Amino acid sequence: MREVLAGAVVEGRELDLGDRTVVVSARPLKDGGTLLV
Amino acid sequence: MLDSGLSVGMSERLSASTNESQLYVAIKDGPPGLAVVRVSTTLAVVDAQIHAIQRAVAAAGLLMLFAAGLVAWLLARVLARPLLRIADAARTSPPGGRRSSRRVRPGAGASGGRAPRHASRAGAALRRSAREREESRTLLEALSDGVLAADRRGIIVSTNAAARRLLGYGESESLPPLGELFTTGHTAR
Image 1 (cartoon, rainbow over the protein chains, first blue to last red):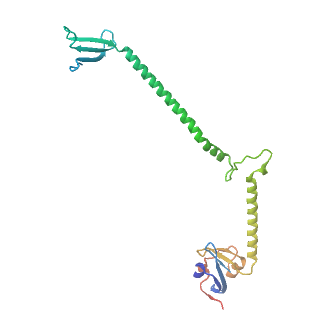
Image 2 (image 1 turned 135 degrees about the vertical axis):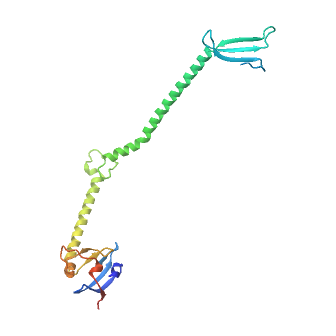
């Protein structure tokens, strides 16, 4: 998640939610934020 | 006062007999038999001339002062005229708007000015922008994939319904920052 917040492009990353796992792709936004799908 | 070198002395004082200012001149070594010759003349005419000159100078000074004040007032009016026009324009212009300096031709009506056209265009642009935002929002909510946006600090600022459902949060619940939401991660195979 540090990579995502730092502005890295992430594809198909499995992230642990505790009781479940989600596959997330992330793109940095122009204003410094991040968009996650 | 007696000048021994020139043998002539002069003094000015008030005459005791005529009670007016007199110039006394004494000449030593005068004609044989006379030790000192003294003459005196009144200074009334000279004083009158001096006073007249003083009055003329004072009158001229007052006149010059008045003329300078008049010129300064006229100059100030000429210099301040553009500023007064700007101040008038600022007072009469609508708040938050820019008033056109061009005169509207008689009979041109309200459509002759630029301001109404600009306001109409701005209103149309705002309506178009609001419609596009609404369309984007509807599209985002209809997606089956979860979508969320976070700011540079990781605070989640926007989510769609699928994201809230996948993450287990209700419509009115606020989501924690990204760093707390997702604990670990590895690339999917």
